Image (cartoon, rainbow, N blue to C red; front, side, top):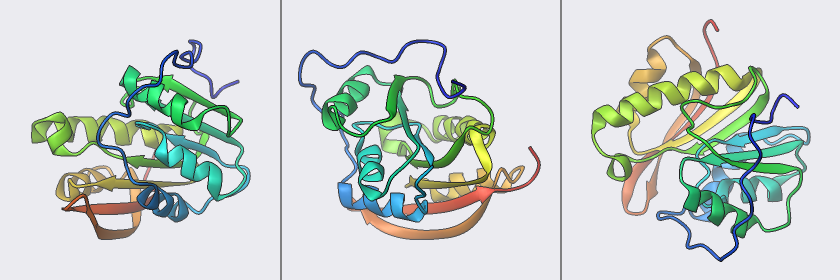
Length: 194
């Protein structure tokens, strides 16, 4: 199928992993999923899925066509496998770099992602580079009728990148209090030229 990366999915964990910190609370994940306007035939992607909280909330929200998740961290993928268990099919989890998604063009209906915060990965320039390449990949794999919901503490960086080249049209943007710090939710649709 055109959705599958060229390598097999990572095997389920043999031991119970510890979820990688920080893990998004299910209530926030539910809110993000709701903003994506779930449909019963969605191919739904969380490209930086961590322990799988967003994927689990999407599975609970409504029927779906396919759940896809991935993360750079092997520990995160193992935690996601453990948290999701044998439920919620069809779905696949992969270890990958979200800056280079091994997915076909225009193959995903909804993307929901808790983006890394500056405190998690380092310098502001690293965040900007990561976000820029990530947005480029999201634009490539998202269908023209798709929707993307992003959670970040890096509002100015994300706003700046969304204005450059206009990869997405922001339809909603609002603040939330997340773990004692100000974060922002962006709801977007494809915009501009591909």
